[in-house]
Length: 281
Image (tube, rainbow, N blue to C red; front, side):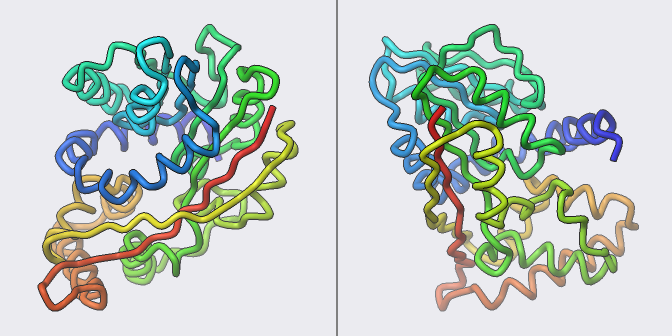
């Protein structure tokens, strides 16, 4: 893998779906808030703390952390995507949160000009990093002694139907070969032993893991497909080389496959498992 090229592609891909994340923010956070709250609890985030949120996207769990640390606390939130960060900044402004700073930064460099954070957070970011151990070592480096890193990743595909439905259809239709075990991707951190080993190698102690449910619901299967088309950068990227006709055909297949999760009211509802892990510096 050409890591520089990969990161450039990631930045471009996430920039391209940033407006979709803005549109679907409430839907995402209705399900994801439980994960953010668990991360804050695991990291022992409290009033007055200094927090770093890595791979914040359009502002979570940075926003939740800013509310918890209060006006005497501080949150710095970083991401590779400037467009995602611009929306995060807008959201924080609309909420009247003045204790968050947003900075474009690579987690595998993590130059934020500060090395005394009480806690570091990283929700659904580790999976996409080509060198997660390097990123984890950087997060360890910027923590106070005794500070905590709390991260969340997606669990195994069968436990995350919101994503595995579409990835299964795309993989089958595009005849994709399974990625190498060390390749970044949505489910690349689903192995808890691997995850714990990485944390330990980065210098963290008192490591513990638990699972949290993120329940996502959509008015219909068609709305679910619309959501994926506007926010699911990995899927959109995989389909980008297909003709419009072929893309439409595959999206229709995804809509049909999601019918298994449609209730009597026509809503498409999924219960998705996230893995939360915490370690102490």
